Image (cartoon, rainbow, N blue to C red):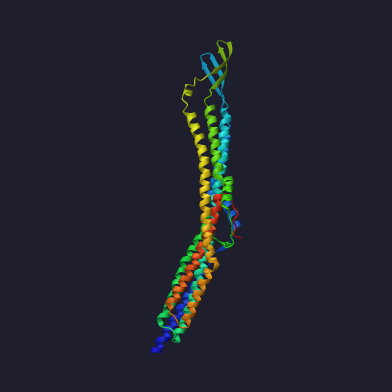
Length: 418
């Protein structure tokens, strides 16, 4: 009777292990359509098809159209009057003095140039965000591989424990514990696979693509070795940052708006030319040409509020340039210090921490198989090793992300994961 129960237990135990293994294979080899994509091709697709970028490009077209609008000249005015036998036809035109049209065109051109700088700044921000999404997809993939490796390792140990239990080398509780740990790791694989797919969906969003086919990132992130000098980075950023260029362009716009405000204080002359005919009887009795000029009395010029506003904008723009320079120095310094700190953290893992944690796990498993320790020690060592691997991946991602952020704030770009 005891032998029959023992046989039933082992049969159930082995079948459960097979079911767990099959479930893991199914989740890792589903039928989702996928294709590989390299980082360079990914960024090109983002630049061509990202919907937010396409929307932003219309601001440049709108600003260019504004230049055309600014070039419009006043329309002539045609008048016709009639009373009894007198008919009058006139043509009027407004002469803009003070080069108002030229001042408007200069302002519109400066604003168009500013919109181009804004578009370039938007693309730089988008490129950094897209690179971060690409990094996250790699991170989720590598994390999935770690969890899968841990599961397969524990599954093999669980199978070994089932055999050792049948041979009487370990207790039933130890065998059950290793099996439960394998099931727990399988559940982590399910959750991690969802995270990985979500990261791939984000890549499609940046590329303006649907989720019918997922793009698998191809590339390595452990070859991004960079060395920088802070003073050189600050100099480079001062020459390359788009927001600083935009601050200078805003100052130019403020100066042009001041010139426009001064131009608008000039009067506009109204010039008219007309023809008048007095038609009484069978033949006209009088023909007369008329010429006129109208001069507005600009009492509003006593109010210099518009000039003061333009002057204040000009003065304000100078401080904006100084503030942008200081902001650049602060952002570059902060990004540099963060990059250097994470770089040192990463070197700790690459200098042997991963290998040492693996040796600890193998040593505990060796003792466990010799009966010198229990399953709890193995599980603690296994989880510690998993934590070290996951912390290494997280640090690797932080390193790559800090590099992306550092180059973004410096206005440079030479990152590739090929």
